[in-house]
Image (cartoon, rainbow, N blue to C red; front, side):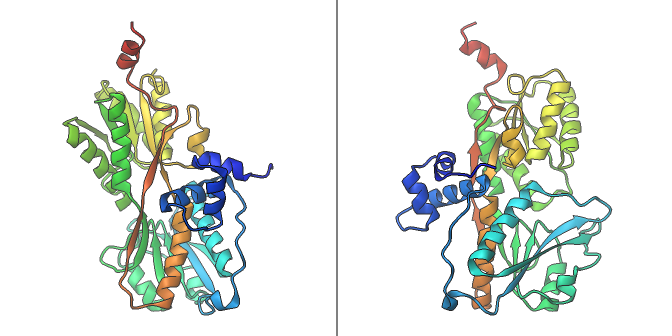
Amino acid sequence: MATVTLRQVAELADVSIGTASQALNNHPGVAPETRVRVMDAASSLGYRLRHPTPQPEERTAALSVIGMLTKHDAGLPVAVNSFYFHIQAGIEQACREQQISLMYANVEVDTSNRPLSWPAMVNNRQINGLILAGTFLDGAVDGLQQQLGVPIVLVDSYAAGSAFDSIVTDNVGGATAAVQHLLALGHRHIGLVGANPASPPSIRERREGYVRALGAVGATAYIEESALSQEGGYLATLALLRRAPEVTAIFACNDLTALGVCDAAYESGRQVPQDLSVVGFDDIDTARNHRPPLTTMHVHKSWMGVLSVRKLLERHHDPHAPTTTTTLSTRLMVRKSSCPPRELLVVGRGT
């Protein structure tokens, strides 16, 4: 595999090589949003970051082993999640910097998100800090903290009625921006797939952003409830286009669902994007490699992991500080799955 160069990182982040170098080496004078963009580009490309080894006095001796726990629905096969893979990469990067060991496991839950069992690292108390990624364990996290007696940070996770530090994405703002992109292209009949009453809070927030953007211009909402999956997007899109053939664009609540939208468009005899523009959310690796490459909202996934470790260290040093929620912005990645509706394309050609 070819070595990723600093020039490639700079090009992806749309900055100069000098700015990329300064951001990667934590030099002062780089705007925070630029630093985030460069770090995210480096992580996405697999650029090897060179960090100085922390001096002994800088290390946190007591916080030596962190656990990362993700949810697994009982009865379903265990598969690599391309979204949480990047979060895990960010956690690993931050742990290396601080010379902290990392343990990883799944927690199997039932249909009500109740844990069926805890992994060995929890039962045997092998960790002194815990990051919960992509879990929705209402009521269970408080008991888990009492059992372990260690700081806990939530990443893209929710525990209603509990007070924990958390790292989340601006789902409402990101979805609003995605729909505003389609509106700016001239679309007025924009559908949504990938949400249903049982969706996690992050997806309900994306649906809220969709509704908010359409409401601001008085446009009609076309919502087809579905599972958050490629098959769910496929089936929902076929149903939506049958009942609302006037739809010229669809916002999908994540990229996997958007891929299903594209599959359904082709089966229905529609070309993407000429007959149906498609916008996703998350910017997983498949998005940029799809044909056509998928317009989507980029989520700073690796940074969510990095910040979760930093927050865990802060909580370890000051356990009585108020809990905080850190919300990361998103970024619109315009690729080739979105364009003006066909009638505007025809007018634009002068025909």
